[in-house]
Image 1: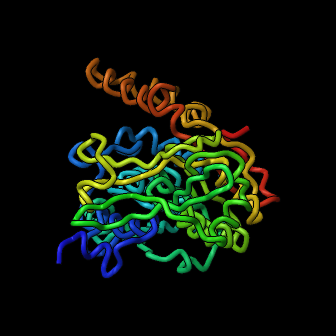
Image 2: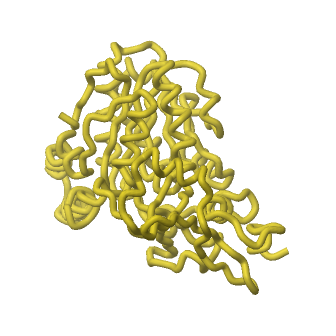
Length: 353
């Protein structure tokens, strides 16, 4: 049976989010199940791959949040989608300089890809770290969730509104070719869009049903066990009503219906929509800020200046080029946004105030 037949099985038409789940996460044919997409040799580069200083800023934020939680003797830190393990590696290395939190923290890596788990285990060797495939495995708190480019990797639904008509996007298989088409949306799906006021304007509407499913558990854990969730991702605040689905292979854009199972597919994150979801589920989001502001508030420029003092000209140039990539508005600085969800009684707002 061909790879494409395994994705569609006996059906010739499946919803876009189910199609994306299969081409990305299916154990046998999914992109993340058999590829290491990260780094220069992969298909794209994430912030932890670019610079350790990015990771250090997150670690400093985590330490401050732990202190705000009154330094609990046991705290669970959960990294959502840990990639090739670069962030966790720096997290462990940095926390060793702070024995009190190092002795208190338990690090859990939420990863479903066996291929990536093997890569992570080669990079991360510590009794502090364990792997989970289900967020319900987290039983104790407080909890700090962190996801860098986690939300944009989750399958989405797409709808098209034309005046009073709403259509849902499906993937169809015809003569070994995948086509993306629209069919009349069912009332249940239309009601979900109405609940979030997504049908005010014509155009393409992207609805992260899989993302909401993950966040539902995260919200429950934070409310029950105390803590918060920090997400950094490629996205927007103002509703676009356009198709943001994109595919990348070898650091170049790829057609969504080509190189199936061998190319990454993502969609931009609608941060306003996620903020609404957090609020509807009893958590507070004070602000959505861009990555540049977050990192500068955390002191990334001062940290780079300190590190560069003892560097050669070549290394210093490389360090500042990496910094520019992270904070320049024309690069990742503006395109990447940061959101922090917390309990209603939590006063912690470092970098967001």
